[in-house]
Length: 366
Image (cartoon, rainbow, N blue to C red; front, side, top):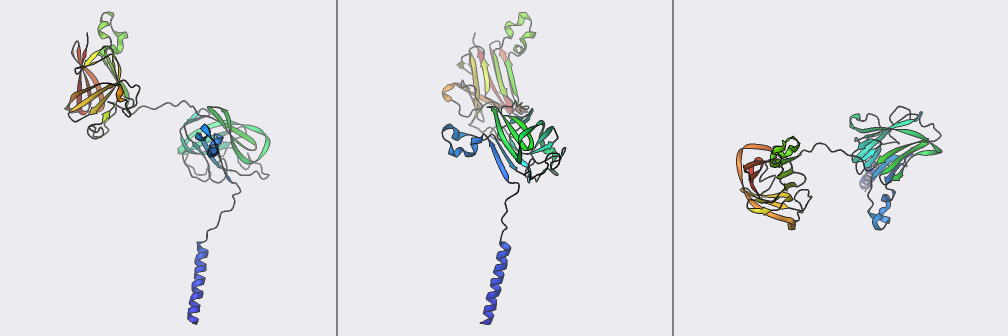
């Protein structure tokens, strides 16, 4: 009996020891509590709104910690001039732009960033970095800075005990992110309608025109102008193979293809024509192809403009023409379209990519 009692006491002590080891220490309230602001303001409580207001979408969100002044001198002392600051306490302040914006005169792409400030007496330099989840600004990766902009400081009428941030609406396209602490504030202007220049397209647009001389009528002698007027023009995007197998894999047999990339390929006939025996009126048409191993079904469609062949309005198909395809030894890395004259009234529009060629016979009506 005595032995059993000793064993029970040992088990009880062991259980208490394990329980003590497994207990977590609950965090105390932070002296610089985290806060969040969003723009537009109502987006934070849109579940309480009604009508169209319930569909509000966020444009900006800022997460930051709010240190207190506590009778300290802030700028130039606690926050030194010329030294980068996390714009708060604890972790670096984070900002999320839900769309591309222009901050001051710098475009910042859509995304999540950490935000820093280098204060001076009369201006702050604000920086945005794609490096996230860092504690303060020390040892941050400067190569990940995506934008740096300088803004003047202003004096506030009242002393702000804690670091504060608020959005000030200017108009539908512009808002100021106002950052204030102590007797200093900075307004960071943000524009939601920036000018965004696109880079070079990986499938650049090109054109094929018949006759070729129609591409530069200002260089044609007057006596040759009549025979140089455009009869057909094709605008199309030029995708590249990039080591891919195209026909039968990238372009699956039996599926509709835009005969190019990006927007649907557009064929302009400047007069009535006959394409592989089918009459087509003058005008502009989207050109699609149902790709098969031995032939293509070419589709001319008036549902314009269109981006690719998805959701094509088939009721606006004006012609569907089957044309045989051939295989050649020469491999074309980029899709190409060109014209080959057969007679004064007939031309082949040749579409080529990889080792596949499709010659489309076109006759001009007199």
